[in-house]
Amino acid sequence: MKELLYTFLKDFFATSKLNRLPESYGGGRIFSKPLIGIANGDDPIFEKFKEVAAPRHMTPAEMWIASDCPEAPNLASQLRIISVVCPFSNHIREESMKAKIMPAEIYSIGRNYANAFKIDVMKQLIQFFQEKGFQATAGMLSEAFDIYSGFLSTWSERHIAFAAGLGTFSLHEGFISEVGCNIRLCSVITNAPLEATPRNSDDPYANCLFYAKGTCRECEKKCPGDAIDENGHDKLKCWTYGRKVEAEMNARLGSILKPHWRRVRGEYKEQKPPVGCAFCQYDVPCMDKNPMASEN
Image 1 (cartoon, rainbow, N blue to C red):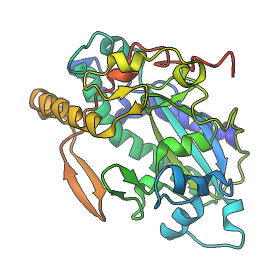
Image 2 (spheres, rainbow, N blue to C red; image 1 turned 90 degrees about the vertical axis):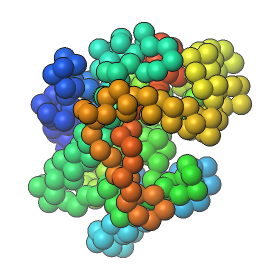
Image 3 (tube, helix red, strand yellow; image 1 turned 45 degrees about the horizontal axis):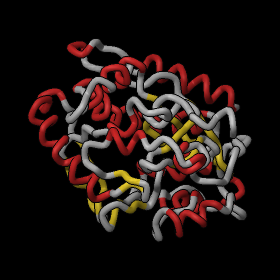
């Protein structure tokens, strides 16, 4: 079924109208071919995420039950979590490498449109499993998903991707997959009996040149918000610079950006259309590959 699942997902990425830029920006794809990884629901790492990600981060079984899916004996062992890597297209990357203080318009649009596409990916995957007689849900689509205390959430797609063997974290706190860090992530939970993807390393920073070799720090040089140094990523500085980007790019592109709703502290709120920044992900060694792949 895993091969059938990937074929379905690859075809959906190729044909979905939501995975397209506006015609005024070429109408090309926002994301190229996906990657998938699969984790077992009873992997002890999910309990660890309550310590390293957020105290209220939910295990797959907790999210499953909170999403009104049926309980069962030894539920966690029956669950599989499919994490999906959505790599930005080469065209968006090429244009973004030219930007300096404000991101390229084509990236801001792609980043904004990506939210609707990711939601549809999760919905399509849920339907895929249901049509085959299984149940499925998605943490990001669940009423149990919440963002609290500023930057914490009950379901972290980066941590789920790590559990599914798709890559590791980095100095800039992005996620370095085999197709790089310039990506978006989403996931679904199912009780379909899929084979899990082994992790190459339980070192959470194994793919980052700085943590592995003490070199690089290119993301630090690229950040116009001064939010990265040898100690890591400063979320507050990043957020503050992101609001400057948001104001500028919404003023410039507001008429073609899509609205955005997000569950924050227990209620859905409409927010300014997200446009991202991602300077730390462009023209760096981990942009489109795992720089440690040959050694890992």
